Amino acid sequence: MDHLVEEEGGTLTEQQTLRVPVAYTGKTLHSGIPVCMRLLPAPAHTGIVFRRTDLPGEPEIPATVEHIVSTNRNTTLGNGVAQVMTVEHLIAALRGMGVDNVIVELDAGEIPLGDGSAQTFVDILQKAGLSKQAVPRRYFRLHKAVWVSKNGSHMIALPAEELKITYTFVTDHPVVGTQFGEYTITETVFERELAKARTLVFGRDIECLQQQGLGRGGDLDCVVIVDDDGYRNALRYEDEIVRHKILDVVGDMGLLGFLRAHIFAVRSGHRLNKGLMQEIRKHSNLTIGVGNR
Ligand SMILES: [Zn+2]
Image (cartoon, rainbow, N blue to C red; front, side, top):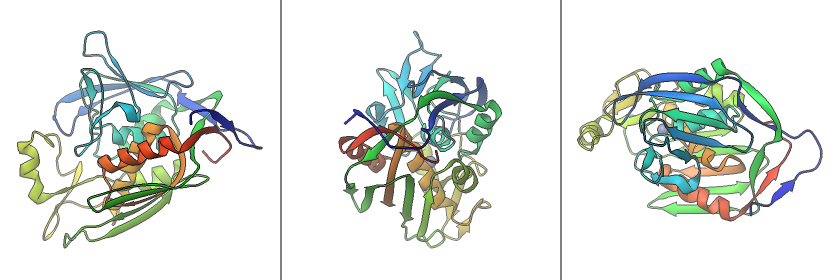
């Protein structure tokens, strides 16, 4: 893999970066501390690169599958001692809105929570604006079906002409129930159908999460909390939970860059997403090509 294949015909989709730098300050989900994040334009082929401005030498952490160091309820990237937690919603917004190249400066080790979804990041990207870079976007294109399975969770990726995600969220929870969602990921679909969906937390898990030091920055506005007798807060979509799971898949798969595949997922989370990306890398080519995004 990794040798470049050029598709026939049409106009190649160009790589994009931000038009101007943009900054956002907010608290984080797990550690609960304020963090200042700056998104900076970057040259073609940079990809997404995190930079820890609070550490000596301002170490950089490329957003790639190889730099995943934890998948415990969030995706954490690391490079030596430098780490960045909870990258998935920001990366979902970047890839969902069509950003190839960006430097993400942070003065702490976690991405700000925003409103718990990807909407905050979509808003700042729209404020900055995007600019085309006159270099073709590269896509991972599968040449066979691949799959991963663990503890009753499953993911299959099939070759396809676009990124499509079909997700089944299975739980015996009396309020949430089984939820199903299927979306072809374009900028419009991402912004309208997925960006606002927030993380689900079961009310009975809150104490345990807090004992582990996780979830300190979460409150009723930033996460969907469900108890056995109902939701504690108003939903943004009736099936907000499955939409958020799809948002997480978009964010994790964004560590590959741009992908053309049809992904079927049942009960998958960050750990299985990582396993699927490793399989996709083994069985795909990098291509430049035409497409709607
Ligand atoms: Zn999430």
